[in-house]
Length: 276
Image (cartoon, rainbow, N blue to C red):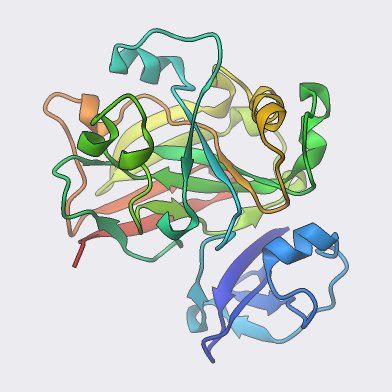
């Protein structure tokens, strides 16, 4: 299944199931959001409501208000190599805030204070059940689904000090969508490729199976230090090819279009605008 969060034509937020070019609303008074449906376990049993043409609704981030957005840094060897860093024994983890997220098709905002606004195509994992101190062998059962993610980064702010967070969570810089794709839709996740295109040019292209720390290992590690809840998001890291490490550097500017494609999971597309 593919689930989306959206604003109805009347402006109210809702969620539903994708059915071709239409969206079947699933929200109820008791379960008004996709996160709530994951939390109460009702997602697969909710009755169909009104149907909308996809063109008649406004997309929202897959989970508009995750309590936690945890991001994995340096999770592909090619990216570690291009940064000149040493591979560590444990994953690098940083956080984003919910107000940094934007939906598929919505403008991605280049912060006014940066001249080095970079793309990072990633696979996002959405947690489906409460998850704490999980062992890797059990981790798959806690996953609700997947979506493309663009960890838009102000590189200069990222490097003001040793912490990544200031460059990683400006409002409107984190693309997340278009849909939550359930695991049963994906035959071989490891074979899918994370591909980023900037103005149509392929700039990142690597298989998910090339991660240094695979998804179960990441969930085990993260859930060891913080409980995860339904709707929480883990962005699993970007491949090599980031703009900041190219010669000459390749940054995003107003008017550009960036696409993150992950095979059957779908394509996230955002145009870049300047912060007003």
